[in-house]
Image (tube, helix red, strand yellow):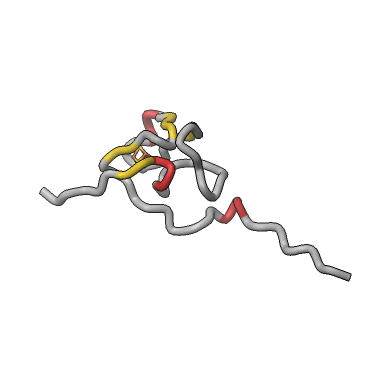
Length: 70
Ligand code: SF4
């Protein structure tokens, strides 16, 4: 049986947070395909073996363009 990675939800791509760097106390839905049907709400410091590291900032969290200096 292949070993899976355990990790904290705050660093997991399935943690449905709107923050680029979720904290331990943040609560969000787990969107892992097999778990999302249970509508799990997990905290940043929770974790499980389905962990997959976040690869970047979600598209919904685009940064504002830097203000121009005139
Ligand atoms: S419960 Fe598991 S799959 Fe879901 S967000 Fe946390 S670490 Fe990721």
